[in-house]
Length: 90
Image 1 (cartoon, rainbow, N blue to C red):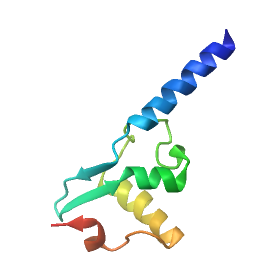
Image 2 (image 1 turned 90 degrees about the horizontal axis):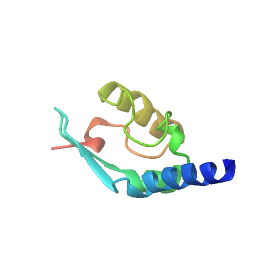
Image 3 (image 1 turned 180 degrees about the vertical axis):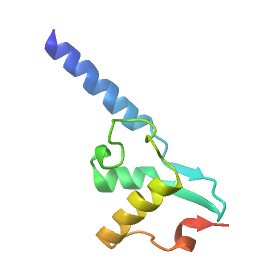
């Protein structure tokens, strides 16, 4: 019975990851930010880096989260945009 429950949980988790949008656009005052979710998924391979509580919307996501977490990760890895105009497109 435990194996069945574990298999069902894994299937639900994998289905959630598979259904995630490839790209998302977030409206912002300085210009829309388009986020390539599939590219980040493929590159990072660990959803918990961004989704600490599991698949789905990121709790507390907004300007402050994105500037700290996303921009911080880009700066740390020396990959990806870190300047305003590189993310915010008018």
